[in-house]
Image 1 (cartoon, rainbow, N blue to C red):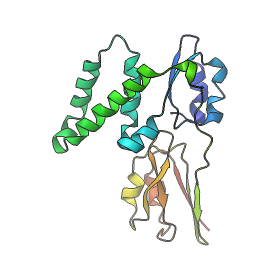
Image 2 (image 1 turned 135 degrees about the horizontal axis):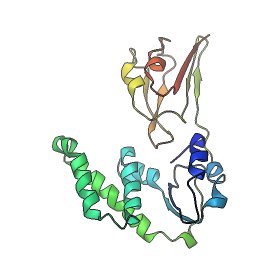
Image 3 (image 1 turned 90 degrees about the horizontal axis):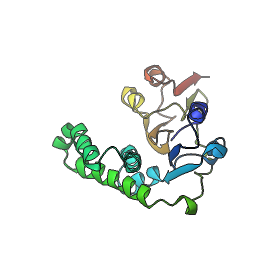
Image 4 (image 1 turned 60 degrees about the vertical axis):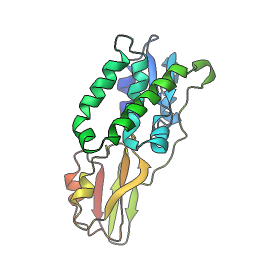
Length: 205
């Protein structure tokens, strides 16, 4: 998926021969409208919705990789599967279920892409959803910026009073966004300091 700050770079790479593969359950329609006139060929994959329902939000990329694999004729499925298993080798050793989740998600993406019929699927995403960004009380205001957060969880780990946790809201990469319990927050600012992407701002009143 992408956010408004990536629209312009994407537009510069689009030609009549471009195949645009996108997550139709994560991209807002108002963003797609900005490039709609340039897109001739596309594959809509509801990756985020499927990942949340059947696997884990972390499986989004595997579903999209499967869809991409379908159209990379010079790369065989077995190569992608073997490389995937190799990539997750250490994690699979600790939890064998990780292999099934990732391979099944990969196959899911392939299946969607192979069956996709552009003539029967409109080029669209989701209606814009306003994600709450500001949480405040009479002493402080905690702000999150979904367009910057990549879900690394450093803020959650760093919080000394465990005021942060992941929410059900998703960021531009399909990652869960952190949320604050404003009543627990002590305004120390460590979450803001540790965030590598400037996705959190804390203001004291």
